[in-house]
Amino acid sequence: MEISDFNELQLDAIKEVGNIGTGNAATALSKLLSCKISMDVPNVELVSIYELGEYYGDPMETVAAVFVRSVGEFQCSLIFILSEEESRLMVELLLLQQFGNLIPFDEIPEYMSDSALTEVGNIVLSSFLNAINLLIGTQHQISVPGVAHDMMSSILDVVASIFGQMGEMALMVNTALNVQGVKEVSGISGKIILIPDPDALEMLLKKLKVM
Image (cartoon, rainbow, N blue to C red; front, top):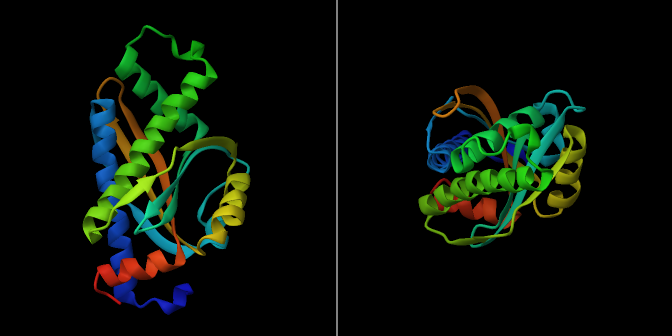
């Protein structure tokens, strides 16, 4: 299917799925960090996986990405992307919550930082997916998350080349998180990309009764 094959009702339903998933992810992240998180209204778009680069900024920007694969009735791939600076902020917030000031942030070893980032990404993506499965009445299992640090263009090339074999459509969600608690942080821009398998997208629309 191409974007033009979807009618307005179907696109609105898909966007609402992204809104619900993002809200659930923000709630789960708030519990993980033990602080209040408010979320700007998400910008949700269904786009071709090969056009993802057009929706982001500087392709040379270094970003951190967490990847997971979901299997079950609603099969899909998910990616959570943050700039390197914002990923360090999220890691710092998590480690502050878990260890206080026992470990100076600039002395945190890379493996510990990546482990914390993986935990954050896993919570965000799992919660996003949980909301969808609850909405449509399906079950899933999620893979062990992986993490990567690279230029945005390289990350999106990997997304298109690997995940594009499973589906050509991507549900792209972009929002800003405002964290209140141990450390005040505003405007962390989190990007979630959900790539449903071709049959999964059709099944989603049928479960939502718009197909």
